[in-house]
Length: 221
Image (tube, rainbow, N blue to C red; front, side, top):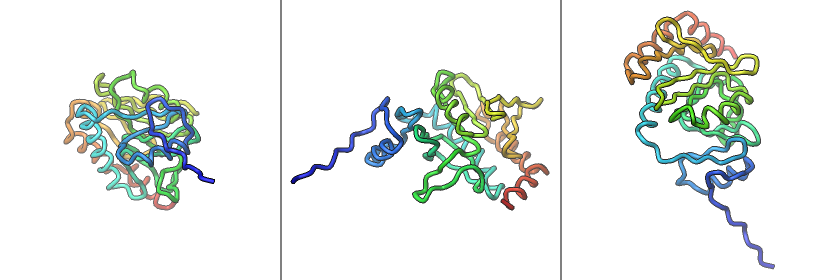
């Protein structure tokens, strides 16, 4: 009897798939750079324009400085995260505690919710502020940052009692992480693409006693 191996269909925007089938199709498309499964639906990114690429690079530079000074953390760019049976996002950036609430699977995927996720969105209409926000909240992402580039808005959500509340900047318009002490963001400088000031401000956060205490805590985990 002759049997035929089932053909692996390509991923398409809007497909309704299980996480296992999503991964199977994704692996069969090595040319595809980004696809996500959100609430069982496939979302595929368009080619990346500079309006996304430059803000993305700024966020990665900011997180790189923090990570370099904070042993016990890990940051990543466009990395698949296995959250639950219906959700496998590929966040623009993430920061996690190595001994924290997420783990690295035997096949090198992140399993569970990183402590902090950043997404670059075109505007408030993006699904980053709709379906994804609810998925990240439900799965326990402690801080969720969304830069809405066209609208010049940066939201920093912090999980409190199962709900996201927006962190407010201080009098100098600096937002300070509640999960990663010393991770400071100069909001005006970021929105004006002043990377030098953004990096100067996070360095100030790294010089605080709170940051040094945090390093001691996660080093003993």
